[in-house]
Image (cartoon, rainbow, N blue to C red):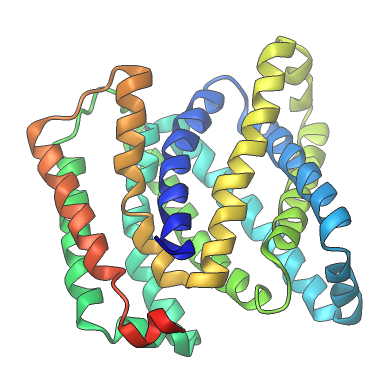
Length: 302
């Protein structure tokens, strides 16, 4: 198994755990405080890694002021993306949040193909369309026949919030791919997470919501911090790495498998079951992703 495939599998598995954790924390913390702690915790770890391992990257940033502007843009995009996403999770469920990644795929693919030649090359392959259609159909079957017990009465509101998050994420991925040509994904993640965390922290202080953090137990607060580090590792660092090394199209296809891993984790941790039709949908999703991610021999050699 090559490195690309290993990274894809690891990302899907780790995201399966990440979404239920995010859902749990969203029910115990206000969105502003939640994101402030998570992003600052993850950003601090990434900064330490960057300082000791990638010092040369900071020289590139200093020499190219445009990179600073792009990193600032990423920070603001991530702030908006996660604000809508976390609020959407509060109104729906972890599985619903992961399923909404399906809707991001068509938009992200079109936008990527418009701006990047390497992405256009992938969408010209017949296997991409065949596999993508299979994956989308399978994912829709998985949702339609899924257990609705976890959804709240605010589902429509949550769906709109998640949809807004997806739109922002599509733009964000294009910026990540552009900046990734110059900087390592860890440095991009460190900058994005820290800036976004500082924005949320300032909002929490100004709104007075930060007081909530002093009212919760130290154990829950430590758990939120660790969840932030784990979330940044999976949802940001690994996602940025895949976008940077394998492309926006591959990343969005992988998002179609995340609901399956989320459902498996939910089964063992929350007792959520998967019915027969969901199982059939899951098989279709996996087959679709295999076809869509299939590369030509020429590409594999490269």
